[in-house]
Image (cartoon, rainbow, N blue to C red):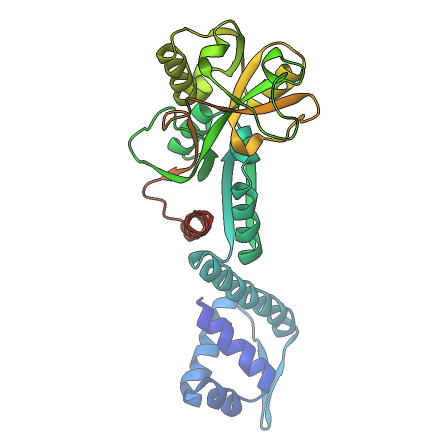
Length: 306
């Protein structure tokens, strides 16, 4: 039994006449009659009662009509869904984010634009550090991820730097280095004045690039930083700074968190190494149209943001 047999049967059932059904199917009447006979033989019962004016459905034919219509409708819907998935209109895309990448305003703008353009695509989200996201994308568990600086670059992955921003110091609001600053201006502080401070940094496995770059900048300023606490995410950094545990560095886009308890300061010696990129990671050979269109949307917004 083939789908065409079901279509032939449904049209004959709707027309109640072989001649009209054949005309509608754009075929000759004898071959149509032969196909229906063959279908009846395969089923083992008559689908129609034949009479001079046409045909009527048998009891078995009435029951089979409903099933045949359902099968044909399901096949049509399946074909439509497959076509929509092939064009990236439907599907599932899984996206990972680090906490600091999620804080950058470009990230929600990209997600919002994509969801608006592709409302039928189901988006799944997860949060982890950069190392975990990179591993998940490499293994195929995630389709794409927003992170800051790559901690590793396994073969087969593509890393697209969307934007780049300055790193800021975060100090408790009552810190001695802030006493001479103008109230409404963002202070500018030299790394050399921080040699006696205790630092709170994201753990090396989660943010090894920015961690190493900051430590190197301190060494070039004449001291090795005293790292008192390592945390899993940059929001925790800021919370602990507010609690007076130490000071930290974060990307500019995180400026504003706990602003009543901490002050954000520019770094006098800020250089290319003390920068925080926003990076989009995916498999270099991403095949799913929904993923390809997501990457294109991200690239478009990154260009607009420059």
